[in-house]
Length: 235
Image (cartoon, rainbow, N blue to C red; front, top):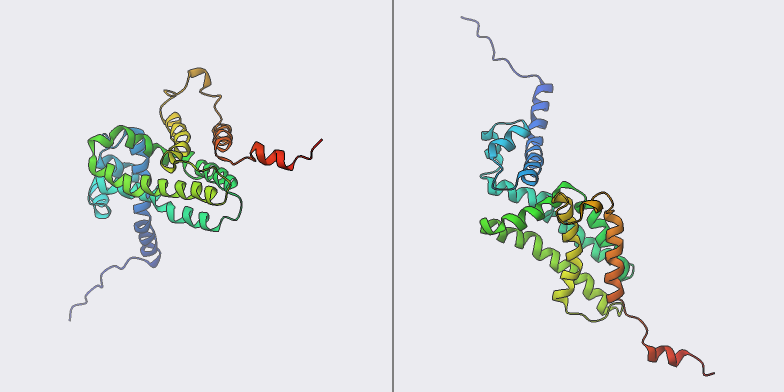
């Protein structure tokens, strides 16, 4: 009887390494896609470029993401949309006053998102949404609407607690969003939003602090003149 040589089996170490590599691939693809989408825009980014930067074949990319559109959606969910559960949980757990909550929200937004490459997705959407209505609708549903809801909750908390004056919530939300939007555009527009002499002088944290001072000066309730006069003893 002829001797049959058993097939060569990969070592356990190689199997383990390949498994880890397979698990890492989606993350590597998302990171490469984020880099390219922010650098080049959605339309100009090609799937093969993403695969090449991630160190895999184009076919491998499509094993995980069925199209470039689905890859972009995954990037948005990974870097922005997926964080709203965490942010809303922090809202529920916050114990301090609402002015402090708003300060915390805007400064943490900068630390966790605004200062990262993912903030470039906002500029991408502003410039390309009209050419890709499906992606625009996705971004509205996954990012814009949850952001508006969260900011509205913060402002309404302040009004309900008597810390903020009653305001038109629709426009109050934009009052908070506008300075954050400008800061993102300033970061990703090669100084197109500011004078060249300010390019190295604008400190994002000081900028946010100045915006908060202005916003809270308009929002926070102050004792009325009548209330103060009632508390002042007669001469």
